[in-house]
Structure formats: C-alpha cells, structure tokens
Image 1 (cartoon, protein in one colour):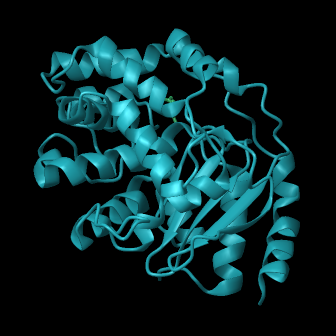
Image 2: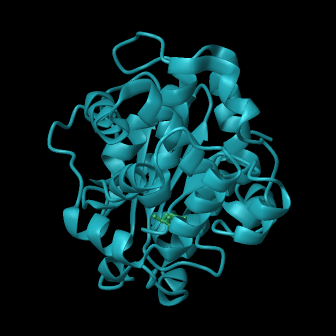
Amino acid sequence: MDDRDLFERITRAVQPALAQGRVARYIPALAAVDPHRFGLAIADTDSRTPRGTGDWQVPFSIQSLSKVFTLALVLAADGEALWSRVGKEPSGAAFNSLAQLEREQGIPRNPFVNAGALVVTDRLLTLTGDARGTLRDFLRAESGNPRIDFDAEVAWSESRHGHRNAALAHLLADHGRLDNPVPDVLDHYFWQCSLAMNCRDLALAAGFLARHGVRADSTRLLTRSEAKRVNAVMLIGGTYDAAGEFAHRVGLPAKSGVGGGIIAVIPGRCTLCTWGPALDDHGNSIAGITALDTLTTVTGWSIF
Ligand SMILES: NC(=O)CC[C@H](N)C(=O)O
C-alpha cells in the first residue's frame, strides 16, 4: 500500500473518533484547542524527509511527550543510576496519582507518570544545570528546526493551576527523592511540558529510538540496550493506566501527552507522531490511538 492509500485509510478511520472525548481542561491554556484537528507524521530511520497528512505541520503543546526526551537525556548523561530512583513497572493508576507515590515511599512506578518525570527532571537539572534548555537544544538539533520553543502562556497556565504536580513534588522531597528545590524542579517541568512542536518535528526528534540509540547526525546518544529500555518503558507505561489496552490495539512502544500528541516507535523502521487534541479518560488522544491502531492493522508493522 502506498502512502496516499495509507493516509486516506487512516484519515477515514479517525473521522468518527474526532467527535469523541474532550480536550484537556485542567490546564486552561489547552482548553481552547480545536478538538477536530488531526495530524500524522512518519519519519523513516534512513531518511531526513518525513511524510505526513492532515495537520502534521501545525504546532501543539507536547506536554508529556517531553518525558521521553528528558529520560533519554538523563540516561545518556548518567547511565543506569536513574533506576535506583524510579521504577520500570506499569502504574495501573492515573498519571498524577498521589496515593500510589505515598504508598511506595516516594519511588515512582516509572519515569512517565508525573512523579517519575519530576524525578527525571530533577536529575537532568543536576546533571546539566538547565534541564529545559538542554531539552530544547536537543529537540532543535534532532528535528533540524531551530524555531522550536516554549509557550510561555501554557507554562504559566500550568504553573498557576498545577496543584497536583506541586503536591507530588513536595511528597517526593519529603521522602528525600529530589536533589533540587521543589520550585526549581516544578519550574523546569512546566516549561518542558509547554514546548510547542508539530508531528513532523516530533517524529524526527524521536528517531534515535528507532535507530537503537543513534542520533540524527549519526553520533550515539544511548547504547542499544538503553534505547531498548526506553522503548520497553514506553510500552508498559507510555499511555499510563491504558498501556495494556494500547499494546492490545496498537502493539508499539508509545508515549502520549495531554496536548493530544502520541509518539510511537517501530524499532529499525520508523517513528510516528499523531495529534488529535480530544482525549479519553486516561488522558490519551482518541484519534491518535485510532490512527495508530489502523496503521498497524493495515501495514502489519506492530512489534508483535
Ligand atoms: N499526561 C500529560 O501530558 C501530563 C502533562 C501535564 N503537564 C501535567 O503534568 O499534568
């Protein structure tokens, strides 16, 4: 099947999904996004020219997609040490659960629930002195787009309303799990979530995960084993307490964000990014899951 047929088939499949779900409202700056948007990009491992359909070049708030990149940057700088601070198990709980963190003495289940991402950001801050700048520079380099930037309105909106993330950070600090002051960790976390990017740039930026750890310029970011581990954690936790359902339907390592983006990886072949702002109850894009489900069903490209 050629690209045109594939994109047509996916676009048709997502139409009913566009009428379902709701855009994230707990970050007021995200509530105004048009829920009928849909984009999809595919970046092959052996090409710098991605392809896509729909709104694939329209920037959106990357939110938790940033967690994949901060995790990779910490592993690149500090190797396996991170895994003593954060687990690698499915959470089976909401991405912002306080109860689970308290029950488990401040060790987050995995790096993709919010508590885990706060620990990762804390490490990146210690290792680099500037977690958000390091992340932005990395994304610009991998995507080849020097205009990628933060959205101050989104960062501000989230920091004003981010009571639950603040509570998680304080709980982590109380358990002695953060090296940096809570306000610094939160600040960097909110800024990293506010980055505005499009499907094209995100598919390119995640390319190292399909190239077994190798960056766009052919230098190595992660060892093969580290890249495998990031993909493994995406599979078990990238879509939170719906990771089982996602694996069942799509069968790929993936990471979602409440801005409506999903990054998915087909190791050795390509990276994908979808965008559809309306979310299900787990905070995952309904159109994105439908698109990726259709894609793996039609092409047979699941990892299973
Ligand atoms: N799942 C998400 O995308 C959550 C990210 C959002 N910034 C939050 O911390 O709540």
